[in-house]
Length: 140
Image (cartoon, rainbow, N blue to C red; front, side, top):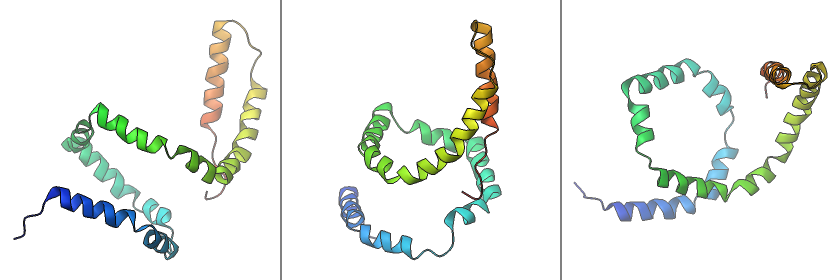
């Protein structure tokens, strides 16, 4: 049996993964069936496995393996990519707001005028209930 060195395996993984973006794009282009649709068909399996992981303690153990410093480091990696992700998502986000803003405006139009603390709490409650009824149109 070959004994593997963790550092060398990690370096090989980093090199191979970093240079694989063209192959990844090709793989994405070759997909012919919606992965989201296939995932949705497995909803019961996902639910059962998630509940089992919670019940067995696996879910909590996984969360507890990550220190706050590790979490912050991971967040820093993602934060650096937010701008490019936002730019790439502009069209999709605009489509969402095309659907959501009319719903929002309809809810605001139904609200009573601002008033004292209790009236404003009631307004907030009504708006939360109204927004909870929002559903996207179509399959997307």
